[in-house]
Length: 247
Image (cartoon, rainbow, N blue to C red; front, side):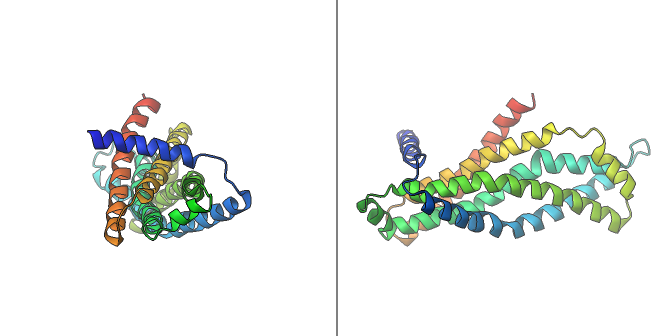
């Protein structure tokens, strides 16, 4: 319990150093643009593949389970869009990004710590926490919602492709199901969750990387801890935010 409370204190102290005004704005914007590429653009491939196939799977499973003639086929489109927007895209994709992006952040900063590059920054009078972690946090907060919207669209598209290829549901019925009872609030709810999850991924991973001590082995351990802790917090806050925003 003592170690847990100490970790929380260290995390809060580190975040107090992270969220300060950058010492050199030009360098910050350059780093921010680089992080957009490393943390966002390079994640497009895995997000696209997983979202498309999961949307197709949800549509096929829904169509397979419609046995009563009283249930309209438009239910397939409705179920697909609800599943993708409410849960799969914001939560599952964020868990995947916690593994891909979180491990990268933790290992990158952890390597700089064990090779004494962070100590060198501190000696030069640079706020290393702000210099290294803040651009990553801002990049995740800005790019992750775009990735999630992209995931939602591809999931619905994947469901439509599956229905067209299998002939289970016509395009008219599928599109009617998407429009039927659609509430824009669910997209807002999903994006609110995404922002929280992005903050968790970037800050928790940055914390574990920054606090790394030892050598290469400890860098790997920090990366693993970052992914596990981020995933647990994402699941926990998913429940909390759902309870707050949907009840």
